[in-house]
Image: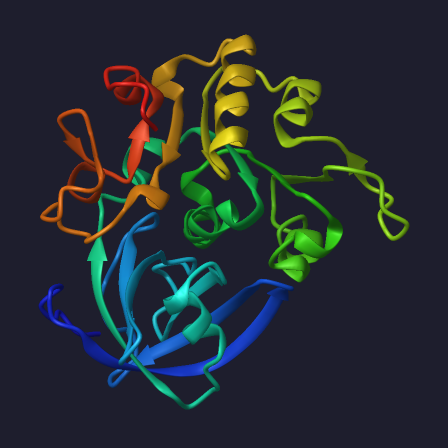
Length: 275
């Protein structure tokens, strides 16, 4: 593992690429000596594709995976399109890590409720993998994950087979509407959270997904009597330069790149409602 300067890109090689959905691919990348740098669940990395440019992405692999980094990337712009066009064996630039990461120490001994939507599972997966690798340190794990359609669910073998097989773990999947090939729950993630009626005692809720989903998930958790200190979310979509210099990530006095992207709801309640 390298302790390289987080501001200087280093070369990394794309080991393999998995098409998750029609517009999301997962890239496994490795540095010259394996893992390019140490990181915490919830942190991000800047990936560059010369001469197209660079962009910041959540690391979706667990830091307990020591041989590579994984990124689940949705094709939405020039850099992500260039990454989607890569083939195994090609090189990219990578630097990081950026952001504060999830407070894994504060979560120890607690039951954990993960709530994700669409590509929002990417940063949650890093923390979920970390908790599975350190299973005795955490209580019961509930995972609620949804997408617009069955085809839009990512990491399908993990969410359907691997994660439900973990000890003391429950996985709840949902899609927004009826589909011929779907026999599971139908409905939006926030309403499913309300329906499942989780109790807040001894529990921490961690959520990430589209902003509109997060808005209604926070409302649902409030109705279930989760306190703002028990709710954690990540605003990784607000990350820009990664170091708080470009001034495009601030919410009031807070710079998401430096002070986030992980915040408790109690912290967000102190900020202007711009997130």
